[in-house]
Every structure is written in structure tokens, then in C-alpha cells.
Figure 1: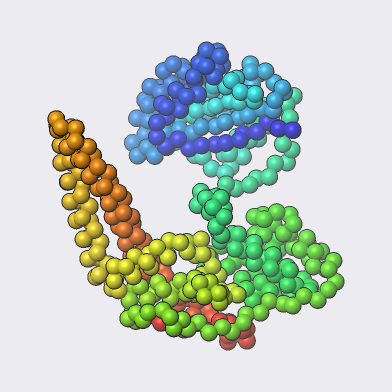
Figure 2: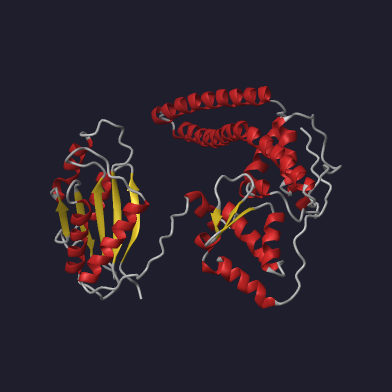
Length: 429
């Protein structure tokens, strides 16, 4: 059964007027019957909110907030849904902020759109949206729904929102640093004959372990610990993992680090030591790129390297650009950047001239030729600007790559001194 809940909370950085126009659309709100204002009139809401913006001298980064409150089908009428939305706005924002509440009745599920001005009309202070305020928003919504006899989620999980980059990577099927941790934990469980061996497996994989009510791991190179149960569910609690391992009652070979030579393949063309392209090619090798192409992939790599696997395509494109343009040093990279920038300026100037020619040409054939050339220039500009982006990334990543290789080398020596089997890295720069 669908339950009443705050389903989405958006930050409105620009065009709050567009949001107000959308949510108050007459076709969706019964010709405006299901529209109300708190501390403002819906018809002049944006003008009133703009006046509130002027009360704060600091730069305006957020104009407002957009809250969507949905209801289960056939549990309430559009009128009662609107009443709940207005009461929610009054209890949360009624003392200081201007709000417009609009109930959309044009779908099978009644839902409220609540647009909140980010700046108080009383003292000009900004609304602070955070985890605690969002929890309070949900709690007041649930309390109102109970007053109207509607269903709510009892004991809801206080899940944190995932970063956009993490969501995008998951949708694309690419690994993230959390999915890498989860995969390592799964392997550590699968290769453990006892709870003690499970913890030992995690240590071999390079994790720092902290035990408490929940088991927490910190990968090498990360500042904070990751709580397994909190991030991956109750099946990853320490008790659940221990019960799963004890229930097997069979021997499992523990995780070990095989000694693998990391020398460069002989087929790779030689590059001068100390060059940027050599650094990038070596980093790709440590991430297993060349081994995959030669069907001789590494069984395991350092966490710092696996953390960058989701960026492997970007590193490959950067390396190809360096190889194609013969860039070995920072000065060569800067020279290529300036050449590409000048080429962009020349193409833009030519395109401006062609735009004016295409408008003033009386001959259709000449106008068509000018437009064809404009299309060609647009494609050239796209590739040139992509090259500039790669140059910026290379200049930024080169130091990070060098630092990671050094840290991997140091970590390998530390592990070796503790008696673990480790990879033998042959770092050449």
C-alpha cells in the first residue's frame, strides 16, 4: 500500500517564478481552487518573495525550496489533501516564511506542491535546510496524516541521500567507492571459515576495522569509517555476518595476496621516464587496463586504485590525448592548451562572420554553403573544447596520480614488513 510521505525535497536555486507558475496551473488545481498562500497572496507571491530577498545583503544562492507531499489513492479527497498541505506549511514556516501550497488533482494520486521562500520576510534570515529539518518535516507530515486518519510509515528509516555522482555511477553500472567496499565485504564473508577469519580477510584487503554496535571499515586513503549495517542493510550487521559464517561449518580458503610482477609489457612502446604520459600509462597498468587487454588481469589491486576504476574511461581518454599529441612534459601540455585555445578563438570569429553572411546573402546556394561551414565549425569547436577539458583534468590529476602511486608503494612496503604477501610494484616515473 502506498503511504503518505514527503517524497521529494528540492532546492530551487534559480527561477522560483517558474516553479510558482507550474504548481499554480489552473488545469492541475481545479481552476485555482486548490491554491493557498501562507504569509502572501498566491497571485503576487513572487513579488512578495523578491522583496524578502532584499532584506539579506549576502549573495542569494538559493531562492526557495520545493516540497512534494503525496497521498495513497482513495484515502483522502483533494480538499482534505489541500488542508493537510496548508497546515504543514503553517506549522513549519508560518512564523517567518512565505509559502504557496498547491494541490494537484489531475492524476490518480493527490499530491501537494509546496513552494517556500528561502528568506524570512521578518528578519531576512535564510531557511537552513538540513537532515534535522527534513526529519522534522516528515514528522509533522506524519502527525497531520494521523489526525486525518491516513496511513503513514511507522518507524521510517532515516536514510541519507546519495550524492549525484554515486547515483549516476550506479545507473551506468560503474563501481563506486561504496560498492567496492560492499564487494570486498562479500568476498571476505565468502572466504571466511570463522568470524575471526572474516576480520583477518578484511585486514588483508587493507581495511582498518572498528568494532562496536556496528562494524565500521576505513579503506586506505579515506578519512572516515563506513558503517556496514547503516550503509548496506541489516544483513551486514556484525551479528548477522557471524551467524552466516558459523552456519556454514565448512572450511573456506582465506584471502591472500599473490605476488605478481608489475613490469610493463614488452609490447608497449618506450616513453621517457618522468613524462606525464608515462605516469598515466603506468597508472592504467596498476588499474589492470593493459592486463585485461592481454588476458592477464590482476586478481587484486590496492584500494586507492580500485577507487578510481569508475574513472577508468576518463584516464584512458587522457592517456590517448597525451599519446596522440606527443605530450611528455608540463610545458608541452601548456603549449598544446594555448594552441587549442587560439584555434577556438579563430573558429568562433569565423563563425560570427558566417552567421552575418548567412543572414545577408541573397543567393540561397551561398547561404547553404555558409550554414554547412557553420556546422563543420561547431563540430570542430566541440572537439577542441573537449581537448581543453582533458588538459585541465590532466593538469589536476597528474599530481593526484603521482601521490597515489607513492602511497600504494609505501603501503605495499608496510604490508610486506608485517609479513603479508603483497604485490611487487615497479614504479617508474
